[in-house]
Length: 143
Image (cartoon, rainbow, N blue to C red):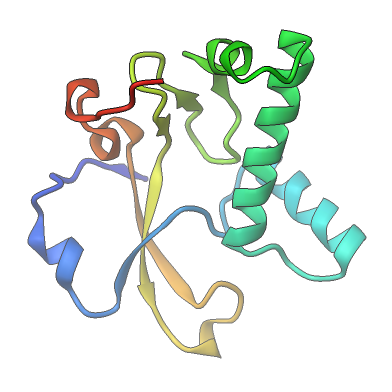
């Protein structure tokens, strides 16, 4: 379920136990399932959001190096501008060309103890990448 929230929605930003989550092992996409199985097979544990962040960053930089044919920073930045990729979520992820922001959906979860098991969150919603990202003119990247 993708939900549109205003970034000014105080009830989501400041309610006790409500958190923004970058990724969760319960995301039910084929690519997320493959990622989870790959981590379990290699490291014998279920991936955390830190594993996800490392995977997403490393796969994108390695692909950019391959496409650009170089490790030169300017060429890599140019290669990734406007690049869409599978961020292991329901919607694609993008490196927005105008300001180089990584635009992606974000989960809203309610924190619990270990009684819920994996992740310790009850996923309440997915907030669309457009809502989270804001307008390009609001950012200040000068690369």
